Image 1: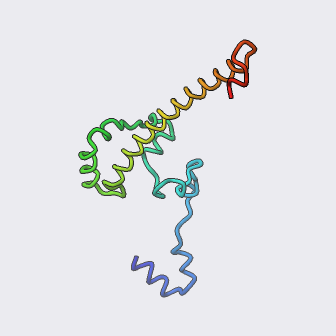
Image 2: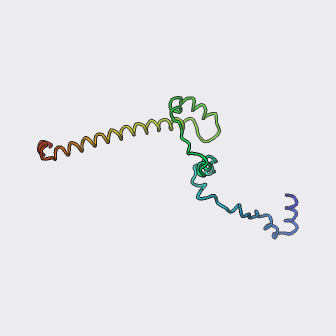
Length: 135
């Protein structure tokens, strides 16, 4: 580094071009459509890259343990470095329960819709009750 600085001092501004990074053919290559700004943290995930290139399957999380032993998971998360905090675990668990409840409500909605359709068909058929009794 000292040798390079002395060259800059001796030759003036012309040597500044010599300090610019050397362009290599491999450094210009972009690995496919990956966009680091689209990822959540702005850095590449080796697991993401590994899955994207087909070396392994997409990981599936077992939320049962997280939901059953939330206090242990919170303690584990608090002891680790990173952006995830104990409050986030609670939000994830409550989201999981909300998702389950929403799924049950959607199933109930489908059942009610089917019952209403059957009633409409039976009341609109010629052998069913008259339209005035429906009102």
